[in-house]
Length: 228
Image 1 (cartoon, rainbow, N blue to C red):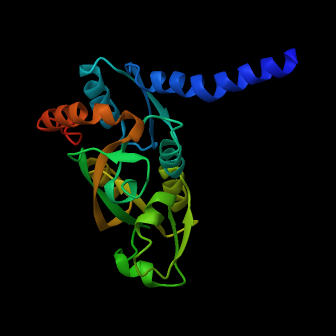
Image 2: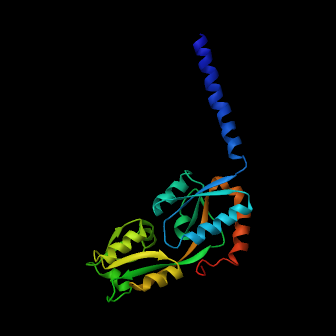
Image 3: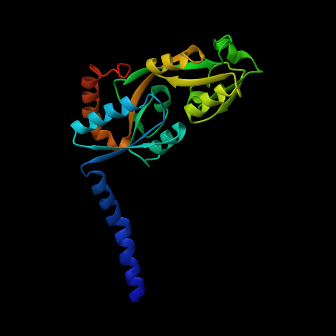
């Protein structure tokens, strides 16, 4: 009888008090945001920019590298709080993610070709061509008429190494204007698409969105990652 009574008390606490405790925790002040980012040679200025945005709110930004597609999945599932920046047309498809305005940067999706080869989107129409890209870029190009064989690697530097070694003739990457100029010294290049890159947060941090957007808009006026 005593055991049954204790069990009833336990169930009462679990059913009625635990949701209240969880709700209270969700409403607690945010003092740290865990944000993912995809590893890219040009990422540092964007991490510094978002760190300065959160600093104005008195929030510590804890950044962690994730493979590109895994980072978005972790954010959508609430494992992390934010991601430094993502392509808006992909991030907006996630149910639990808020895409902040304005954009942090207008990026480029470019084709890298082995030096001396013709380099244009025509290369993607040849079934014999073997093209290396990331899972995210593959998703971005899902609606395009591409006949070439696509292989995905999450690390951009590894993809370019494969191109250097002659194991493929073509690689597709996302990049900044400055990084594009650097890789153009080594490879033939062609623009495939321009994309809008935005900071994104999980919906549980919706209360932060108005202030984050205000600060991003103000700081964007003087932010130029291509100037560094």
